Length: 212
Image (cartoon, rainbow, N blue to C red; front, side):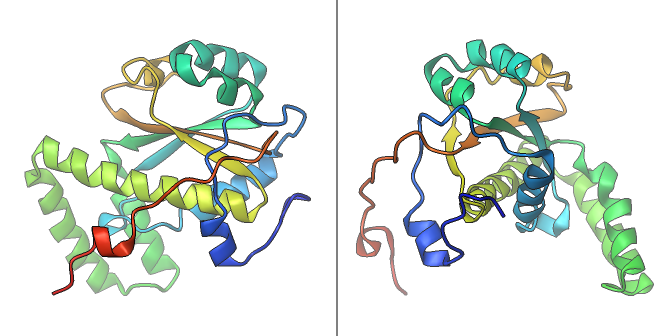
């Protein structure tokens, strides 16, 4: 865990989370700790465990300078944070199904006959799924991993900010990805806040919930 860790209390992690716009540029996150954060994030659920999320961790000065013009209204987050994590949905994620389900058998999570039955059904499902529906499924899953990433980061003592204002049609190609295959979800800045983020109002449960 980071030296900045505050608490592992889940209520404090969720209720205390803020979107932070400016970070202490002197604070760096090691590759080892960033890997731990991403591993925690990838425990998020996904449809048929397909795990369509992909990450580009932009931590170098060169990488940030490349990103900054693509996030014109969020340059402070880009340039002062320890890193910016670009989250993508892999539209060819079905290529990993054999590896995922094969490992589940190898690790004893699933018997071979169940794996064979499920994998056949899942592949048939993917083959018939319209592109727009696949995009919807993958985007939901990538959204789940993004939220979990921000909560795990907070458990490590770091602050984050989800960023939707950037050049989505240019981000994949700028970092060497096939823009048809890798669809951008959001940027997430991460680091130690230079000042606390502002609290914000949430609609009450009674407003957003219907009971039946």
